[in-house]
Picture 1: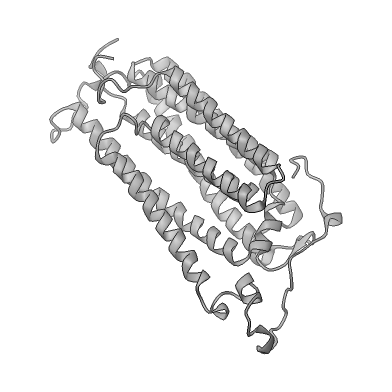
Picture 2 (picture 1 turned 135 degrees about the horizontal axis):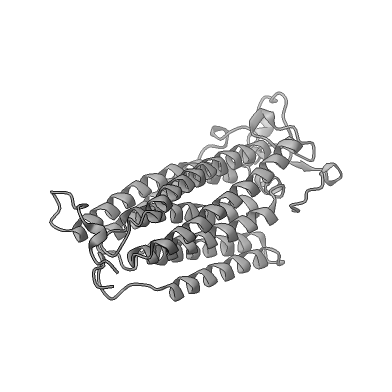
Amino acid sequence: MTATTHSEGKHLGPAQYVLIWVALMVLTGVTLAVWKTNLSYSARVVVALSIATVKAALVAIFFMHLWEEKGVARLVLVVSAVMVTLLIGLTIADNATRYPFANPPYSESWMDAPFRKDAPPMQAEPGPVKTSPATRSEHPGGH
Amino acid sequence: MHTEAAAQGRLAHHFPDMKTQEHAARMGMWLFLSTEILLFAVLFTAYGLYRFLFPLGFEEASKLAHVTMGATNTVVLITSSLTVALAIHHARKGENRKVVGLLAITIAFGALFMVLKGFEYYHHFQDGQLPGRFYHYAGVTGPGVSMYFTVYFLMTGLHGLHVLIGMGLLTWVAVRAARGHFGPGYSTPVELSGLYWHLIDLIWIFLFPLLYLV
């Protein structure tokens, strides 16, 4: 590796890549295992998304060579991540703090609106979410 | 191997050396990837927003996703990321034959991913689990249920398109590797298309838990 085009001394070899791959596989397994436990729904969501973030970081830092990258190229991904967080966070915060009727009809906040009983009746209200397992077809992929 | 031979004649006149040129190339690729991230971010925002507005509908609808195939596809994509990373490693050393082999495996994994995705789509179409007003599945009904499938098809569809583009890119790079183009001084095309492929993996890492589990 005499004429590499990268900063010296930080190169990863096949052994490290395989190690990262093993870590990613284990994390995928943990995600699925935790999902099937009896933990509360929100706890499982937090675990699933935290593990996804760790996996993404592993891919970005090692597979995408941010580890051996210099300076500003690292900054691009960090800035993107911040912007994505802002975009998603602020959009949901906006809808979460709206007057209920400003959200789409039949959404949860609209259903819970304190004035809803006084509101004129809406046409063709689809009503609550219903499931009827009997009509579900069988899939080879399973559920 | 043939040190710097691969770099012969590839230096643009406005760069002082290959090292600077390659750094600029990867910098540009990262900027492009950031626009890709923001493209998907809009869809992730749509997902987050409608999930917030219709939590019950999304919870019930996401149970219709085929978790086994989704999980298999996660394994397939992560493994294909490994083979790309190894391909880049060998491209830097000028071992072009290994690069061709590893890229061929990667492309095969990409094809496998698309085939499994196709089966999933087929089942959803068969059952009428479709976006918006095309939704006609009687098993789960209610507000927000068809919106889940709108978001599902938009996100996995755009992601699948990226997988196809990535397979095309890697095919082109594999052909160049077969002609012995890469070596210690020059591996930029392998690096950049590799970055693109890793981004596809990165996005799927978030899509899988959000669409199939949560």
